[in-house]
Length: 213
Image (cartoon, rainbow, N blue to C red; front, side):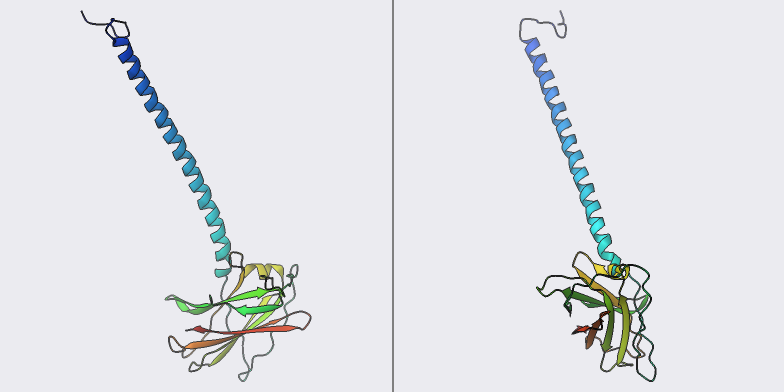
């Protein structure tokens, strides 16, 4: 006669059936654990991606600002830039020195003229990163180019203007300028940069450096 499933036949059928059920149950538990771990990992990855995207968007804010073109010159002389009327809260100024960062570079894109991404480190008396509130004039000297010198005026007087050009990741100010040359500097030549920060009090501080064109 055939045996009935689940009935004790006296020869160990029930223990084997229980063992099969136990094995199936263990497989179900393992599968549930794997799914739970995968769900947690996916959640962590998503949170990490969001955090990275947040950091990246903050960093690219300053990099995405429209470049500043040269200030107009009369007979080769560029007049002092007039102070614009503040349209918001003034930026707090805590810096005692500025320096041109080694991260400054030439940015090339086939769709437009090359730009200079000038990065400024602002520090307080203790050498810690600080904030800028004022006007910056950048002079670019490129021997062999035409014109050989160009001037750019940028305002960081208001909080909005300063924040727009601030990179909170590297804690630098990013000044994107667009030289307009009839004859560009030779590729690989040294371009001299001079940045002068003018405060509302009339005080000034200066930084110089070079970048490779």
